[in-house]
Length: 210
Image 1: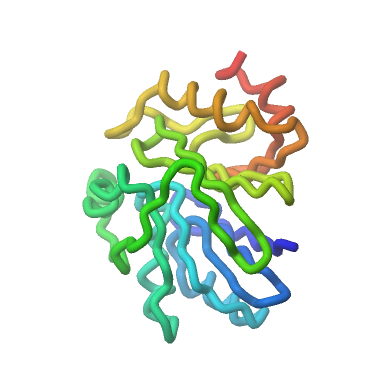
Image 2 (image 1 turned 60 degrees about the vertical axis):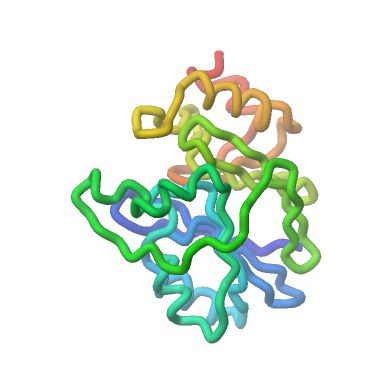
């Protein structure tokens, strides 16, 4: 069983997902956006132990809370990122392009690869490399729960922007078609911004995919 606490945080309303195996209390944060103290408080309220920070990609609004989370723990969390996004991470996730500076927090120490299986208690997640929004963008697919944590790959009736450095429109469309639309239509898509959707709804209603 997987417990999911979505939190909308930061200046661009980023969805951070605090997830846990309630039986063991082992927790991870997918995209620790901005207000790390808020995420920590939610975990503490439930008695969960955050051991992992899993990034879908290295834009600043998706890991701006990593430093505060790491500072508040009595252990070092595993920070996971695809190696193709390490350069972007080192550049503060592009924050200076928007007139901001952030504390990037602990350096990622776990390289994600396509097809890799991650474990959180009794839950398993398949890492799928989905470039196009950034070169190292990934999604996390939990087949048992019929859901994907999509980051900024796909949104309800929209797709991630491709006009920032490292973005490419044709690449993102191919990533969506091969790694998302190939999944069962009742698979839930939990995106980095906005409402949840499903594979079936995006096949039918997403104007970028018609």
